[in-house]
Figure 1 (cartoon, one colour):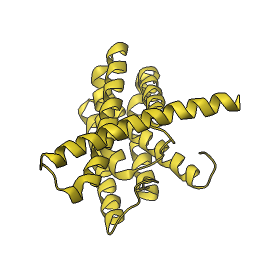
Figure 2 (cartoon, helix red, strand yellow; figure 1 turned 90 degrees about the vertical axis):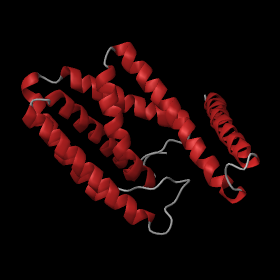
Figure 3 (cartoon, helix red, strand yellow; figure 1 turned 135 degrees about the horizontal axis):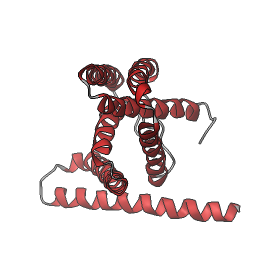
Figure 4 (cartoon, one colour; figure 1 turned 45 degrees about the horizontal axis):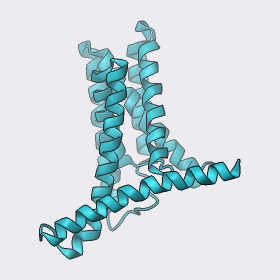
Length: 211
Protein backbone atom coordinates (compact mmCIF):
# COMPACT_ATOMS: atom_id res chain seq x y z
CA UNK A 1 0.00 0.00 0.00
CA UNK A 2 2.80 2.53 0.79
CA UNK A 3 4.34 1.66 -2.59
CA UNK A 4 1.05 2.46 -4.34
CA UNK A 5 0.87 5.87 -2.63
CA UNK A 6 4.48 6.59 -3.58
CA UNK A 7 3.80 5.72 -7.23
CA UNK A 8 0.61 7.81 -7.23
CA UNK A 9 2.38 10.85 -5.77
CA UNK A 10 5.17 10.48 -8.35
CA UNK A 11 2.61 10.40 -11.17
CA UNK A 12 0.83 13.49 -9.83
CA UNK A 13 4.16 15.28 -9.44
CA UNK A 14 4.99 14.45 -13.06
CA UNK A 15 1.79 16.19 -14.12
CA UNK A 16 2.74 19.26 -12.10
CA UNK A 17 6.23 19.27 -13.64
CA UNK A 18 4.75 19.09 -17.13
CA UNK A 19 2.72 22.27 -16.55
CA UNK A 20 5.74 24.01 -15.01
CA UNK A 21 7.89 23.06 -18.01
CA UNK A 22 5.24 24.32 -20.43
CA UNK A 23 5.01 27.64 -18.56
CA UNK A 24 8.80 28.00 -18.48
CA UNK A 25 9.01 27.23 -22.20
CA UNK A 26 6.35 29.83 -23.04
CA UNK A 27 8.14 32.41 -20.90
CA UNK A 28 11.38 31.56 -22.71
CA UNK A 29 9.75 32.08 -26.11
CA UNK A 30 8.36 35.45 -25.00
CA UNK A 31 11.79 36.44 -23.69
CA UNK A 32 13.64 35.30 -26.82
CA UNK A 33 11.25 37.32 -28.96
CA UNK A 34 11.81 40.35 -26.70
CA UNK A 35 8.15 40.49 -25.71
CA UNK A 36 9.18 40.38 -22.06
CA UNK A 37 12.41 41.32 -20.30
CA UNK A 38 14.86 38.70 -19.05
CA UNK A 39 14.47 39.96 -15.47
CA UNK A 40 10.70 39.38 -15.72
CA UNK A 41 11.07 35.85 -17.05
CA UNK A 42 10.66 34.06 -13.70
CA UNK A 43 7.56 35.96 -12.59
CA UNK A 44 5.96 35.58 -16.04
CA UNK A 45 6.64 31.83 -15.90
CA UNK A 46 4.95 31.70 -12.48
CA UNK A 47 1.95 33.62 -13.84
CA UNK A 48 1.67 31.37 -16.90
CA UNK A 49 1.88 28.31 -14.66
CA UNK A 50 -1.05 29.59 -12.59
CA UNK A 51 -2.98 30.58 -15.74
CA UNK A 52 -2.59 27.17 -17.38
CA UNK A 53 -3.66 25.39 -14.18
CA UNK A 54 -6.67 27.69 -13.81
CA UNK A 55 -7.75 27.18 -17.43
CA UNK A 56 -7.56 23.40 -17.01
CA UNK A 57 -9.73 23.60 -13.88
CA UNK A 58 -12.24 25.87 -15.64
CA UNK A 59 -12.55 23.49 -18.60
CA UNK A 60 -13.11 20.54 -16.25
CA UNK A 61 -15.77 22.34 -14.19
CA UNK A 62 -17.57 23.68 -17.28
CA UNK A 63 -17.57 20.19 -18.81
CA UNK A 64 -19.11 18.75 -15.62
CA UNK A 65 -21.68 21.57 -15.57
CA UNK A 66 -22.68 20.83 -19.16
CA UNK A 67 -22.94 17.10 -18.50
CA UNK A 68 -25.16 17.74 -15.46
CA UNK A 69 -27.29 20.31 -17.30
CA UNK A 70 -26.47 23.11 -14.83
CA UNK A 71 -24.14 25.28 -16.92
CA UNK A 72 -25.68 28.62 -15.87
CA UNK A 73 -25.43 27.75 -12.17
CA UNK A 74 -21.88 26.55 -12.75
CA UNK A 75 -20.85 29.87 -14.31
CA UNK A 76 -22.35 31.86 -11.42
CA UNK A 77 -20.75 29.59 -8.81
CA UNK A 78 -17.36 29.68 -10.52
CA UNK A 79 -17.32 33.47 -10.95
CA UNK A 80 -18.33 34.12 -7.33
CA UNK A 81 -15.90 31.52 -6.00
CA UNK A 82 -12.93 32.63 -8.12
CA UNK A 83 -13.44 36.36 -7.49
CA UNK A 84 -13.25 35.80 -3.74
CA UNK A 85 -10.74 32.96 -3.65
CA UNK A 86 -8.07 34.81 -5.62
CA UNK A 87 -7.77 37.41 -2.85
CA UNK A 88 -8.79 35.35 0.20
CA UNK A 89 -6.41 32.47 -0.53
CA UNK A 90 -6.92 29.22 1.33
CA UNK A 91 -6.08 25.53 1.30
CA UNK A 92 -3.71 24.12 -1.31
CA UNK A 93 -3.22 20.40 -1.83
CA UNK A 94 0.28 19.08 -2.48
CA UNK A 95 -0.45 18.61 -6.18
CA UNK A 96 -2.54 20.41 -8.78
CA UNK A 97 -4.64 17.28 -9.22
CA UNK A 98 -5.36 17.41 -5.48
CA UNK A 99 -6.36 21.07 -5.73
CA UNK A 100 -8.64 20.33 -8.68
CA UNK A 101 -10.20 17.38 -6.85
CA UNK A 102 -10.80 19.51 -3.74
CA UNK A 103 -12.55 22.21 -5.75
CA UNK A 104 -14.54 19.63 -7.71
CA UNK A 105 -15.85 18.12 -4.46
CA UNK A 106 -16.80 21.58 -3.14
CA UNK A 107 -18.51 22.45 -6.44
CA UNK A 108 -20.47 19.18 -6.64
CA UNK A 109 -21.50 19.45 -2.98
CA UNK A 110 -22.66 23.02 -3.59
CA UNK A 111 -24.68 22.01 -6.65
CA UNK A 112 -26.24 19.12 -4.73
CA UNK A 113 -27.28 21.45 -1.90
CA UNK A 114 -28.63 23.92 -4.47
CA UNK A 115 -30.76 21.20 -6.07
CA UNK A 116 -32.11 19.50 -2.95
CA UNK A 117 -32.78 22.47 -0.64
CA UNK A 118 -36.58 22.82 -0.19
CA UNK A 119 -38.01 25.90 -1.90
CA UNK A 120 -39.19 27.47 1.37
CA UNK A 121 -35.64 27.28 2.79
CA UNK A 122 -33.74 28.81 -0.16
CA UNK A 123 -34.12 32.48 0.80
CA UNK A 124 -33.19 32.17 4.48
CA UNK A 125 -30.37 29.74 3.65
CA UNK A 126 -28.94 32.10 1.02
CA UNK A 127 -29.00 35.04 3.45
CA UNK A 128 -27.54 33.09 6.38
CA UNK A 129 -24.73 31.52 4.33
CA UNK A 130 -23.76 34.85 2.74
CA UNK A 131 -23.64 36.66 6.09
CA UNK A 132 -21.78 33.80 7.79
CA UNK A 133 -19.27 33.61 4.94
CA UNK A 134 -18.51 37.34 4.88
CA UNK A 135 -17.87 37.07 8.62
CA UNK A 136 -15.49 34.16 8.02
CA UNK A 137 -13.60 36.15 5.40
CA UNK A 138 -13.18 39.04 7.83
CA UNK A 139 -11.84 36.62 10.47
CA UNK A 140 -9.57 34.37 8.39
CA UNK A 141 -8.60 35.96 5.06
CA UNK A 142 -6.18 36.32 3.49
CA UNK A 143 -4.15 33.12 3.74
CA UNK A 144 -1.04 33.06 1.57
CA UNK A 145 0.04 30.29 -0.79
CA UNK A 146 2.82 28.23 0.87
CA UNK A 147 4.95 28.58 -2.27
CA UNK A 148 4.21 32.26 -2.74
CA UNK A 149 4.49 34.23 0.54
CA UNK A 150 3.14 37.77 0.70
CA UNK A 151 5.59 40.53 -0.17
CA UNK A 152 5.77 44.15 0.94
CA UNK A 153 2.21 45.40 1.53
CA UNK A 154 0.47 42.52 -0.29
CA UNK A 155 -1.10 41.18 2.91
CA UNK A 156 -2.93 44.45 3.54
CA UNK A 157 -3.96 44.76 -0.13
CA UNK A 158 -5.33 41.20 -0.23
CA UNK A 159 -7.03 41.63 3.13
CA UNK A 160 -8.82 44.79 2.03
CA UNK A 161 -9.72 43.43 -1.40
CA UNK A 162 -11.02 40.10 -0.07
CA UNK A 163 -13.26 41.95 2.40
CA UNK A 164 -14.59 44.31 -0.26
CA UNK A 165 -15.25 41.37 -2.60
CA UNK A 166 -17.04 39.44 0.15
CA UNK A 167 -19.19 42.47 1.00
CA UNK A 168 -20.10 43.00 -2.67
CA UNK A 169 -21.05 39.34 -3.11
CA UNK A 170 -23.11 39.43 0.09
CA UNK A 171 -24.97 42.52 -1.13
CA UNK A 172 -25.57 40.83 -4.50
CA UNK A 173 -26.95 37.75 -2.74
CA UNK A 174 -29.25 39.84 -0.54
CA UNK A 175 -30.37 41.89 -3.55
CA UNK A 176 -31.12 38.69 -5.45
CA UNK A 177 -33.28 37.47 -2.58
CA UNK A 178 -35.25 40.74 -2.48
CA UNK A 179 -35.65 40.98 -6.27
CA UNK A 180 -36.81 37.40 -6.75
CA UNK A 181 -33.57 35.83 -8.02
CA UNK A 182 -33.23 33.61 -4.99
CA UNK A 183 -31.60 30.67 -6.81
CA UNK A 184 -28.92 32.95 -8.24
CA UNK A 185 -28.45 34.45 -4.78
CA UNK A 186 -28.21 30.96 -3.28
CA UNK A 187 -25.59 30.00 -5.86
CA UNK A 188 -23.46 33.02 -4.89
CA UNK A 189 -23.87 32.21 -1.20
CA UNK A 190 -22.81 28.60 -1.75
CA UNK A 191 -19.73 29.79 -3.63
CA UNK A 192 -18.88 32.03 -0.67
CA UNK A 193 -19.38 29.05 1.63
CA UNK A 194 -16.96 27.10 -0.57
CA UNK A 195 -14.28 29.75 -0.01
CA UNK A 196 -15.01 29.63 3.74
CA UNK A 197 -14.38 25.87 3.69
CA UNK A 198 -11.12 26.43 1.79
CA UNK A 199 -10.03 28.98 4.42
CA UNK A 200 -10.93 26.63 7.29
CA UNK A 201 -8.97 23.78 5.65
CA UNK A 202 -5.97 26.09 5.31
CA UNK A 203 -6.12 26.91 9.02
CA UNK A 204 -6.12 23.18 9.83
CA UNK A 205 -3.29 22.63 7.36
CA UNK A 206 -1.17 25.26 9.11
CA UNK A 207 -1.77 23.54 12.44
CA UNK A 208 -0.70 20.24 10.92
CA UNK A 209 -4.12 18.62 11.26
CA UNK A 210 -4.20 17.88 7.53
CA UNK A 211 -1.48 17.77 4.89
